[in-house]
Length: 225
Image 1 (cartoon, rainbow, N blue to C red):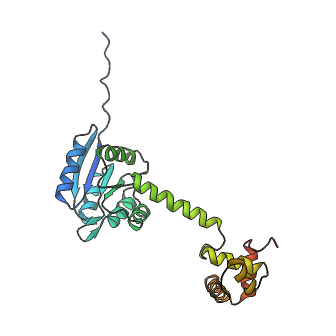
Image 2 (tube, helix red, strand yellow):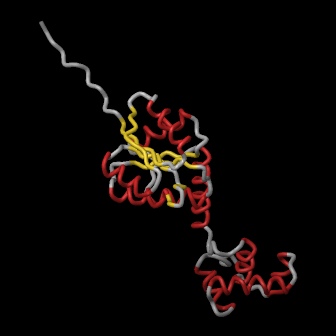
Image 3 (spheres, rainbow, N blue to C red):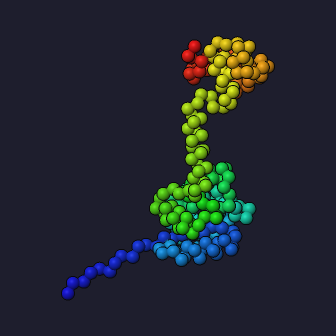
């Protein structure tokens, strides 16, 4: 008679919930408990209790709200990310503004969903974060991509602190044109050109037109005379 070892049972994902809204919290617990292989090990409603929960239970994933009744889920995220690297924080919140998104990711969150996410999106995010992946909801991912695209574009443009018009004026100054010629080229009044040039000098922190020309040519402007 040949015996075989019993089939191995995949370990349960251990999940904690941090949210101070009882109705949402209860609904999230019920959803996660209904999913195969996921076990909710506890919940908390403020920063101190959230940290205590992770200290005690060591969950694989914590679902984190950002507004915890006067305390901040970002603070809780930062503490958990620093003290428990094996626990992934998945932010689930109502806030979709850029500041909340990027502050959460800088604090160490591995995922960011809005509270209107579907059950399938939540399950996918929990499993992804537990697996060490970074997962953003569709709207949040679009914001992140737009931010990164803008950052890359700014990095490739000389003097990104200048407006497009100010950069045009500086380019023409670096080509050796005076204000009257620049005004005609750009269909502006000489006074407007002077105002743009004054802004350029202030933003580049240079004393005069000559220094601005040197900076501009070093950056590649005004070189194709």
